[in-house]
Image (tube, rainbow, N blue to C red; front, side, top):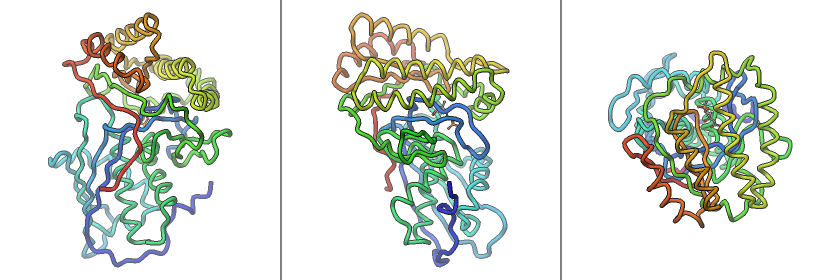
Amino acid sequence: MDLSLFSLKNYQNNLSNGSVTWSSPSNIALVKYWGKKEHQIPENPSISFTLDDCKTITELNYQRKEQVEDAFSFKVYLDEEFKPDFHPKIETFFKRIESYVPFLKEFHFTIKTKNTFPHSSGIASSASGMSALALCIMSIEKQLNPGLTDSDFIKKASFLARLGSGSACRSLEGDLVVWGKHPEIEGSNDLFGVKYPYKVHDNFKNYQDTILLVDKGEKQVSSTVGHNLMHGHPFAKQRFEQAVDNISKIKNILETGDLEAFIALVESEALTLHAMMMTSMPYFILMKPNTLEIINKIWRFRQETGLPISFTLDAGANVHVLYPEKDAKQIYEFIKTELVAFCQNGHYICDKIGFGAKQL
Ligand code: PMV
């Protein structure tokens, strides 16, 4: 695809200082992205539910520098606390996106960020955090280039977010977003996420996601390392083909509302993601004993009641319990009485499918 859509050549240089704020949610993949090429290009297409309550709110203050220097200048605060340890990640992000947003070195930035979910919850804040920051940067670009259309704004924001953290490009819109080229999804491409363009059955409206916090600690293996281990992985080729196939299948499932097929596909995707981790070299396991306890309890409850409860997993031990709104009462009761005991300190988060980022 032509990258010139994302370049900014002629822009007004009259912006001095100000502030922009965006809130951007996390997302949970149904068909997983695991494995990437250079420049954050995914090895396979993925699709996610955008979440509603788990989000990052980022305020970006900008101040034109008196003299332009050849360096980025910014300070990061999380919950009002100065965070020099966030510096390298943002510096890397700025380096990756600088050629598309060439005004970055003209300003000093203060980045004030907070998450609606606890920092140490084991929920990655990179998707919501990177998308919120990318949107703030795009709001500055919009002021420098007022002719930018809303559609190009969102595409470029997703494109920039992807360069911060791959899955972040799926957090800007809702309720379902596809990232990665797939022949049956119109407009899908490797460079940015697109809102799922087809009909979705009412069964998936307001779909619930209760996130069971099994392990709130730092992951032993980062997703960057995990993605890299897909290079030369013995099952990589089959896995990437399977993901392409699963996107074709989920398209039909989303249209017909076939919950049984949805459950089978989503749980298989979750376990395949972890199977890739367990079969890479070096191998690793991110699930914990309580992750398996919860999965077994979900399976037993589903068998006994016939209710369409399912789970998916991120690159960690926490379990996302997914279920339709119409069965929420019974399933939530089961979660509280049977599953919460397996969460660290009994902590969990009630979320649901959401509609993307908002400027505040
Ligand atoms: O965005 P990253 O590089 O942190 O990768 C995330 C990968 C998974 O969360 C495991 C799967 C996905 O598609 O979100």
